Image 1 (cartoon, rainbow, N blue to C red):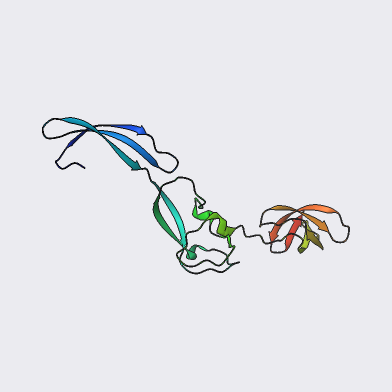
Image 2: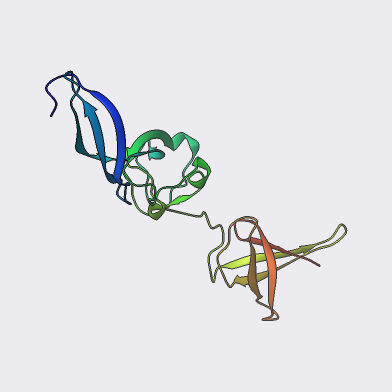
Length: 174
């Protein structure tokens, strides 16, 4: 530790920060008498990151809305992490387990909002300008609105592709 005021004349990185942000540098200082010396200084590089936290308690199965989220600016000692990078990566997702207010969102606690579950019996709709045909089908995979999924027609047992347009509804081309 320096007792007197010293002038820093040069800094060299002896060890660049590793994945944990730990680094080491040599600092050349000059004291008031003009004497120069090198000292080793360890340091930690931190990254500023925007995280998203809950304003209120949410239960398993709840859908996250913008009203549920508060932004937090924090410094982390690592750049990677299991945190959603954008608010759009959180809004509209489903909570996987009960979460208390103040908890920071991680990708492990949320999942996409699937409106169709695998093996669910759904309505299959085929329509044109003049005709609309509807039948029952079994979803062969889960799907979000806008996804194209495989559906087995319950009458013919044929597998078809359709676009998820709502909860329990898949549209197919005629």
